[in-house]
Image (cartoon, rainbow, N blue to C red; front, side, top):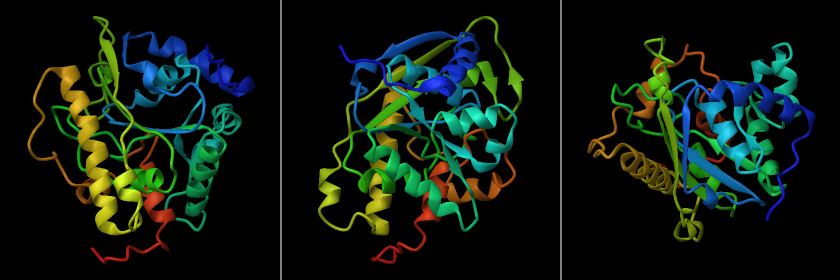
Length: 267
């Protein structure tokens, strides 16, 4: 039996805060054994509520791993919480600045050190009223292709029924069920042999990642997803420029960080 990954004092403090918070919903974990108990991994997830980071952090921690999220760099300045962010090894994102590349370097370093990174390719919570994933950014694909580590799709459903971030409606009772369904690692070997940094490859891999997440979400919901994504990433980027998300647009941060790595096919 694998031992729990050591997190230290600050991870323990975060757990002490998040575990009671996430107890607001009933937990259902399906396929959790597919998350590696040791070694690096990228966990690709959908994003439906501002509760997701806390709920997902507890989910990963219950699998004996310490999750690393992309957080807005400004959160480091928040009293106490900022110390937790820094002490627990989270990755600060300095959007639109010369330090944007630091988040990409930190992500690569974390994977090289055998850590688990959680990323929401959509960047922010979906605006689809039915909660289906929107078009995603390519940052997650870039991270996955540049690191030969397990890339694991995970769908989560139920947090949006507790707290809807856009209507600001908080409905803790009656108690809702929050379900996580973990899929098999996605084989990206076919995309590593050519030019993994080309625009066409990044678009294709992004679609592969999100199609699998959407398939898992459909399985949880026992519904068919829409044939077309609710909205495009470009539209959401413009609309969300002022949205205060807890984990804000990490995929876009990776895109910005790698701006110098221009796609070769010009697509």
